Length: 591
Image 1 (spheres, one colour):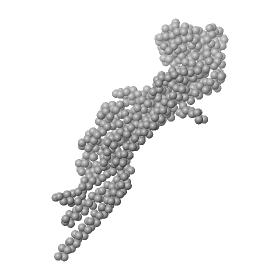
Image 2 (cartoon, one colour; image 1 turned 60 degrees about the vertical axis):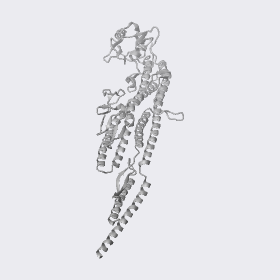
Image 3 (cartoon, one colour; image 1 turned 120 degrees about the vertical axis):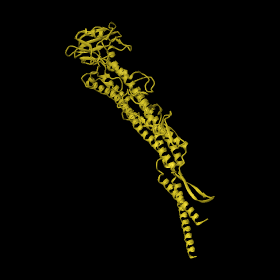
Image 4 (cartoon, one colour; image 1 turned 180 degrees about the vertical axis):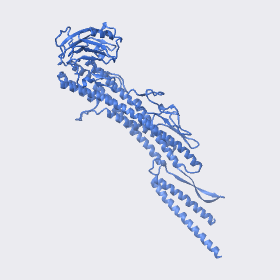
């Protein structure tokens, strides 16, 4: 072997070892870099004319188990969903307050505790119904119930709004990942065509793919040209020869009535689209999948449970309050039911409507046979026939009854009246003496004039004797009949319909409220357990992939030491060869 060949071999070894040292150093430096995989400088012998002429580095590669990567991508998607669900359900559970345990000296703040506090206030009031301070306590306790229902409902809608905003933000992140994958596809092809290593670019692409999967479930494969092509679960292209961006516009305002309907944004929420195709239903996992489920299913279910409690509570309280009247009686009563003069009146039985003075003494009255009236207008005419009363259907479509004499008020005893398909008493049917207003948890409230103190609780009842005498007392402020009836309604059995995953049941209001709180707490606990399980699964796959393709610093350090020795040996060989060249040249010159 000539000295020049030997020198070439030594230089090739020095060059190859230099590359390997550079790769090993990069491995050590990037050991903690997210998504980085161990790189290897592949070495091969150079042969010329059947004779070895040195070594060369054929490329820098990394080895990633593709099946393991797919498993990690799927697990990352599941973890993204579980993490989001856990976060939102934890916040939801906090909205419902805490319950008092048997071992705790603190008072619970849950809806069940608030309703129980209202019942306690009613119990106290029953002993002295005419007490102004005890009435105020009862009103305050009732206001606490309606306010908590409103606040909880508002909190649920805030969470839905947050979820919707998070969807919009996540769609932006998804688009960034899709564009990055597409750009890396192009770079990888360019580098490969130029004979350069693409290992680092492939790491970046795999990291972008994992980040994308944490946002939404995707399927993907590597094409023959080296591109990674990404699709939705149902095959809608997200990255092929280019990136296909998702489009989404968050709702400007979110209420209990805001919903998502596929193919329509008129109801509030728009769809997530790509190339004009609505893919909302195709996103079943990842952060966005969880946000969609929370916004459109989980949180509306919680709202429906609250609405069931609120509507039944409103109906029960008002059914009792319409049996009573305050002392002094109110100068006017205005209903809440929407009617017109021509609205048919399907009613039977008798109702007593009276005019009384401030002390509850009778001015005038009349018992009306409701079967005699075909329409609301007929009823208005009959009430106008009672001395000292004026009735009408006001501009808002509500029945209004007023006492015409100064200082006088209106009192009603529903007697045997039965109106409408539900057979409600006349006052209850029209909502003339409702204590609570609203159509659900979002707007439930204590009647404003009672809350402000301009009207009193309807704790008295109009005398139901067969005949009444003008000037006699017909309203007794000291009777506990109405208060006890209200307390009995709240503590007794009420039928609750199926709502938000809770089955139909018959229970007291406190028990139903406790069931709602327990239901939400159970979902939050399950979400926490699922998150822990998904976190373990994802970590297991990530660790397995790291073990298979990650950097082992100890091994790389040992390898670096070996390579340095090889480099030193190659350098020494070159020095020897150079010395031999020098000796040879000196000998030739001497001859």
